Image (cartoon, rainbow, N blue to C red; front, side, top):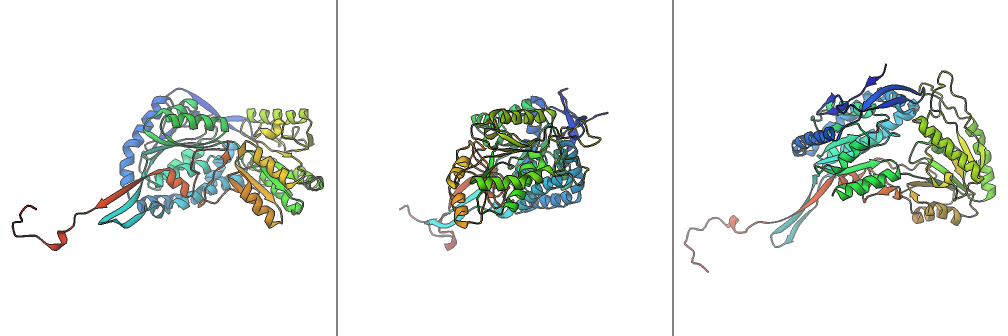
Length: 500
């Protein structure tokens, strides 16, 4: 028997009223384990109105007291870490360890938000003119919203709502309808941490709910993470409605492997970055670019035995390296793209299509690891984001050709170079037109006090996620010029003064 989930409105679980539901699967078994209500336009608008009513009192709460809520939230996240990770694994399919990492990277952004009293300080100029002082204030926008993806159901919601709420905003979270349980659990913990009712609303839904958020005039800012076509749609519609919008889209992350690289280190890095979380990461390395045929041959030789030893299994298997993909449709899309690579002439060195499902989990959405060699830039498997455990190898004749491959691709989320040559690494970091760069680091996700964001078709908007950019995004600056009349300090005048 499946259970029906809810929305989270004004500090309580609220049943859906639209009559529409979406199935939530356990990707390891392929079975429907719950249903999530899909909100109507009226339900979204009611949640926004309630948030707007609660927000002024929260904005008037001083930043230090708001930060204390985040302090307690961090404690509760650590207390319930295993509980959150288990729920996440059962809906997403990640291994238990990977699910804990999902929660942890969100928790670290919450820790950064505890510094809100400092981060919200403005600027001050004494004596800007005769008797004139000038200062700025960072003030909340009002109601902000986040539309978050299935692949990080804990981390990305926290990347969105923690800074927004710390700045004094109310927040509408529309999580993925594929794995919404953890976002609802996070809302419960925020209430337990002391957040007033109405400041964090979780509204489950599909495109109807998304459009309602984008069209609601009370919502002042929207953040999104997902595919590039949807990112472009949300950015355009949100901006057309006068909102502040930041959207992060797809990726095709290249890892350049120089001839002088430690090949064992490079191969290990590619295994984790290419196949971890079944490749369902926007920062996954999906393209290896060895420089020179000899480098390519050595790299492939190192990769094959490592890939063949990968253990694909359910979250409950402590030895599993990665789990199933999110849906049967995702599995079919991955297999379809693999076939296009074969048809286009790429060499499928490791074929994971016939992977045997783990015993007892035959109905799950399993995809074995794949490795392609001799991939060329005109192939679909190179141009498109596969979002699965598929690594493509594109051989480059020179460093300049390798650099050009990454620079010419339409996506610009993350990239990496593996080398012992400091000059090559510095040149690469300086010239590459990609937002996040790793030097002997395969997945260069910045820590919470730096900002996360891609370039080109991987990012839409002017400000990045987390770090100081988040506090800029969720506030607007007010500048005050003040002049006070002089003479008061001299005391009162008792004689009648003639008009001058």
